[in-house]
Image (cartoon, rainbow, N blue to C red):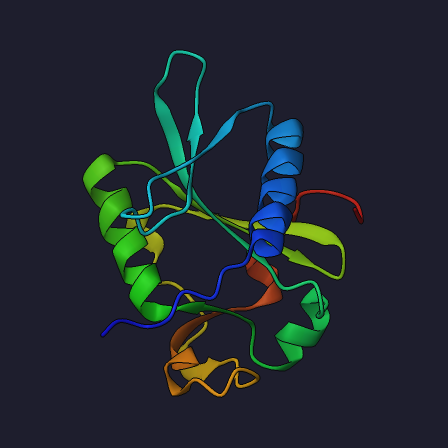
Amino acid sequence: MGQPFYETPADVARERAIAEEAQRVWCCPLVKLKTAFPCDWGAIRADGQLRAFVEIKDRNGYSLRQLDELGGVFFSLMKWSQCEHLCRLADRPFIFVVRLAGVLWFHHTWSRYMSQHDGVRNCGRSDRGDPDDIEPCVLLRAHRFKQLSEPL
């Protein structure tokens, strides 16, 4: 049996609001991809060409500085690996957008550089009592992010 699906309609709405702000700033539509894709979104040009694969996270309870003090923003190693593979096959970049303390930040990279991160640590959330929520994660320190927007 697979891991339970925890995403709620409120989670989807928050992610969609982040995507709308990102596409406004970048002047490029973000399209939600099928659930079979490891990356949730695609940045699509007007001619239909895929510009980048995009993953969006809402970790609004923390600031970038706070997560940096804990070792960095964490991202599932399994998902990171799957995104790296997809980006390599499509020869497209990967963009990780995260909302922290109301501010949008992004990390842009190409598959050949995805091994350049700040370590791998077993971490995750423990508030649901699900042991599968704790897993090996890639850590990304603050210096790898650029600010995308002012506080929402």
